[in-house]
Amino acid sequence: MKQFFGMSQRGNLSEAVTGLTNPQFIMLFSNDTQFESHVKDLEKQFPKVPSIGCVGMSYDTRIAEKGVGVIAFQGEISAAANALEQVSVMPVKYIHRLEEDIRKVGGTQQDTVCIDFCTGNDACALTTMNTALKQKGISLVGGTGDAGKVSANGKIYQDAAVYAIVKNRNGRVKTYKENIYHQLGNYRFIASNTNKEKYIIGSLNGKPAKQVYQNILHVTDEEILTQTFQNPFGKLNGDDTCIISIKEVNGNALACFRQVNDSDVLILLELGDYEAITRNTIQQICHDFPTRSAVFSVNCLFRYKLFSERNYMNTYLQQMSALGSHAGFVGYGEHYNNRFVNQSMTCVVFE
Image (cartoon, rainbow, N blue to C red; front, side):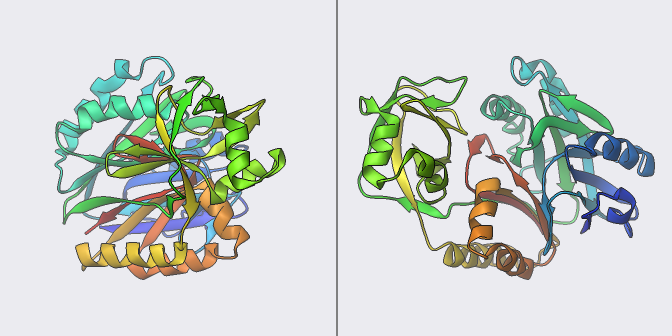
């Protein structure tokens, strides 16, 4: 297979797809203003080619921040795309679409991945999708788009998760998740007074969540929203840690980008040596895949902001290009199999 990346900072779709021929699968990353027109134009130019899209930034060694970006797979690829609608209330109503596409593509654990873009209620959507994917052991990589709208096969959806089942007919696929944070101290918190719908943590160990965070890190209310780049919360999930970013201060509570439930055990995290961690990720991928045809990744918006503030973003993209054809998009939350995570990078590697 071969991965194509094209972009136009001006939002010119024709410019972004210059040189793209015979795609087997297309991903569109547009801006809020032009999304609808880009979806329609893409379908006109490449009718009946499976496609999914969302509002967001995309990149290879460069980044399209406000225009339009297109990532496409060519060659030995089989793909099918569709949408699970009503993700806020009943995504399982549409699970038959995903089951049918898995059968159509003939996906297996070794050679197939599911790529998805969601408008929200990610945890529920991922749990639903996993009921179908786990039967074949198929991994998932994806993220949340902006502006509450996504697209599949030329149609725009709200309150939906769009997905593509992608089979590499010429080799293996494998997914990865990168965490640039580690535990700070021995803090352990029991969450309470939470609001599942608004992702609010009211109390930690019986004390107001905002006060607990401020007392440990010595930050003001205004500084909390940038301090989360350095010190997000973490939720232990077996041997793994799911990162939980703080979205805003809500009175004496903290609103997050990921759901926290009463009695969840949380820890506090701190930023690690992200340059060394990136090098380790690249080395691990090269070890697992001596030959690679493509790498598609999802980087969190907070990672993008952190790397940009530290003048590392361009260096990061150059380092990842050592893998060969690397491209991806900036998400508002990252999907890894059945997990919804924050401040992470997830990716799928094609042999």
